[in-house]
Image (cartoon, rainbow over the protein chains, first blue to last red):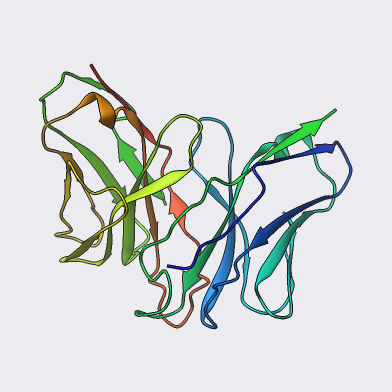
Length: 115
Length: 116
């Protein structure tokens, strides 16, 4: 199964941008890159996903490297409510592809946001 | 639309007891899975299912059984509870990866289990 590598923790100040990196050097050509976050005592929630092109939604932006071996989740203006553990995972598009069904979460990145 | 519903939210078991954690989703999702999360750790996959009648093991399946008789329900059974199974359990569901591997995964709110 393809693995992802993320820094254990990062810190930011409120209203500043935050760039959360993720390495996935063994990514398959058919794997989507997903980001989820987990607030304390809650289940993970969806943030954003992409395949090859950069993606934007109301929560964040996802920048994907041209070789797809890394990606960066961008929070444009961090708020205190963005303090959470952020997980980067890969999801296959078809049976037999990397990580089909077996969605593996790594340790994630603990984001601390300072007032 | 209730999303992914897990019951019970909290449970205390004695060593050796058995119990079932219930998970139900009303979104007609083919894919369902169970994770456990120990303090300060990430989520570890226990079992998953890509459709009714189909289940498979994840990273940490020992001590747990699952079945998928309907699309909506995916119960997790602890056969003989052990203190090492004290954890928070999350159920998740989504449409199958298929040609659109971008399908969002929805998680339940978690079930806190303590085995004494």
